Image 1 (cartoon, rainbow, N blue to C red):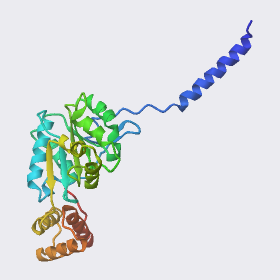
Image 2 (image 1 turned 180 degrees about the vertical axis):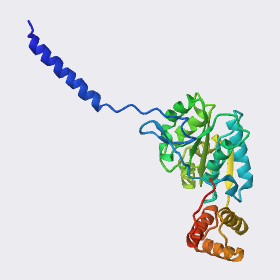
Image 3 (image 1 turned 90 degrees about the vertical axis):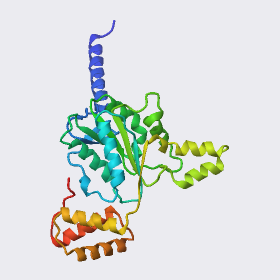
Image 4 (image 1 turned 120 degrees about the horizontal axis):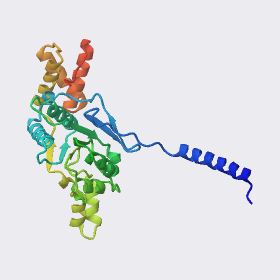
Length: 295
């Protein structure tokens, strides 16, 4: 017959073991309050959407020199927010010409439309290195009553990087396809998101070169909108500088502003919206004035 004292001791030890094991188990991921803010960043380590109370962006009317693509993206975003058909968008081209700024500004402009009656449009940023976690993120967004712009800045893929296949499936190619309440916006310096040498390598080593290249470049075909951003002219660069200076009340002689802005661009070997903003930052600092990007 078993000793009751020994059985009690064993039960105590088992209870302690269970308690220790439960403490070692990872804590449940906190539920994301998607009504808390209009912008979030996806953190796949915890399966959580971290709210962003203050978004780093500029006002839509301060983005100059890209009027045509601005209007196209804004219209696409507005239609999606209203539950109408809209396309995934790839904003590609020259660095510093406002690709990511335009996405964030269009999102804010749609939400601030005084005639808007729908619930707020949400912006969710996913980092390029987290693309392979898209299925988990889409499962969360699909279950929400809100509509989402899923945004990836500086999206590109290198040699031996296979995560682009996850993106292809998530955008259109999977069994379920993209959820109706999600649209994908990406920015990239590469039109096909893949380096040229990677495409050329596929062409030269594959048994069927055309099929191998098609597999690589077909990723960009998942984006219904291709919006190209090109280097700005001198006049467009000066217009951007003047717009920033005027918005921030920087009173400078027009000829002096023009001369200094051109010199600034020359020393950097580039003219772009980013260079214009950096010049205005320097100018405001010299004048002892605070800056506002207008948002």
